[in-house]
Image (cartoon, rainbow, N blue to C red; front, side, top):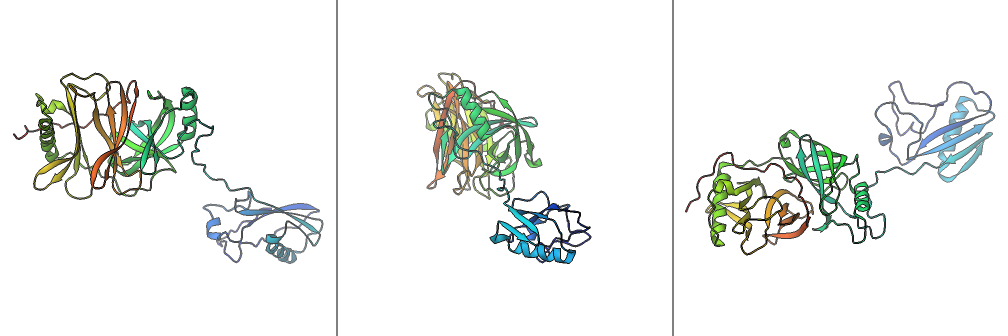
Length: 414
């Protein structure tokens, strides 16, 4: 017999344990009743739609009653109330010819977070994993970057002696299985989710990748790439997404800052600053005022693994606006291919993934043989590199369309 509270009334603390039987009994029968735990508020037990007493919720006890002679309705109600009041201290109760057996509830079912390594020495991450997402139309390529451990990052690699195919299978099933959801971020704000659908080609380091359905807010509809964490393991980040635009001021100052760095390192100016500028992004590293910028300039090189021109070079910088001097670099790396191995940097995105004040920045790093990632953070008032994974030999993750000026920038001031 199922009994619901209907007809405009609602469950209260006074009637929450009351059951009003209807109809006449017919012989011996077992009656199963679900009794909410005494300290479970009725407001939490009430749910949208019909409230059935079966099946039992995780916070309720199931009472089975078998009886040859059922009391009158009034005696039956009092008997049930008295019996229920004694349930906390009894497992089996006999009353008025009725045998009452208390069946403990099943343990509550909770969503299980991704587990650490299930096999000793298998080398799976035990903490949250940072992902790089590259838009592919309405889908996104999902690439694991690193494990977040406190205020640092740990590279992801199959341990020595572990089969790469077995590692990828276990990694994918544990960290981002098909059907799982990732929380998507852009410029330090949550902008949507991606649901993992299919596996994709592994990275040169043997890490699995995937493709998923991407859903983002309208303001981020044109963003080419994102950062992400598995849902349930994401950092507690609040705030609305607002992408700072690439203003004429940024376009004017980007080649000026690049030229200063080029001349400081004794390098020749490029024939065309427009051709040398391969990436220009605006980013808010601190609220208010002019946005900061990140830019990559290349001569005789490209944003991909492979050889560079022997006379080429690369320039990467972050620049902040100074009212007296305009944009000035706050972090820079200049690589002269005549004297140093190839090293090309490009900003991916920024996110506060370690809980410290301010954003951390994820960069892509391209060398002659590999593509990897690096991270920048402001420590003790200075921007510095806090982590780098040089990657492994092989093809790099496909790059999104990078931001470039719609028109040629003005010639730098001499």
